[in-house]
Length: 229
Image 1 (cartoon, rainbow, N blue to C red):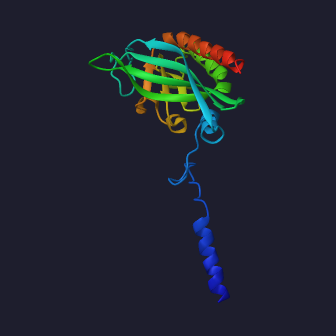
Image 2 (image 1 turned 30 degrees about the horizontal axis):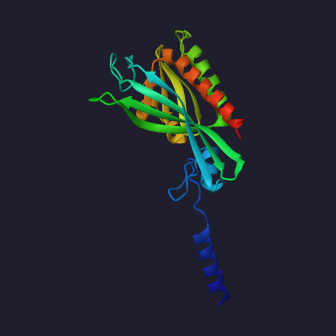
């Protein structure tokens, strides 16, 4: 009788135990994925009743890009024009304005084939405390993109900044450089070759300074919002 009871307890314990992590680091299918930013976690579990605000800051128009000989792109292939929209989002608890969270939301759009109107393909969120690091990274990428590579150097180089649900980078293949921005499940995006991610907006590296300037405007807007309550 005692043996049966012990066996039953063991079975219950095994059924109740959380699924083990996979050896390659991936989460099992049943695992609940947590939001990638502090802002989103605050909105979901730390802010009720919650007030959410949106403050559009800047839209950066991206001209069509003529690709060099890149994987999955023939030399001379042209991308569609695009747009990167930056907005500051803030959430605060009603009646307790001091409990707030700030982030930047970045929406990626490309021009529709027939109407040429922007169509959103993805959006990502980055917490306020990481926006300065993003600005510094994009500025450094612009410099790195134009540095000559040694003849015996690597065939390809990928430089990226990733945080929250946003990834920005520069890829160089045989001396040719293209900038890109992606949004979504960053841990998955960062482990895949850039050209295998469909939600990618490509841009000339010459547009990186305009991107840096837009991020600086985002930081200034956040600073003003912090002092408004």
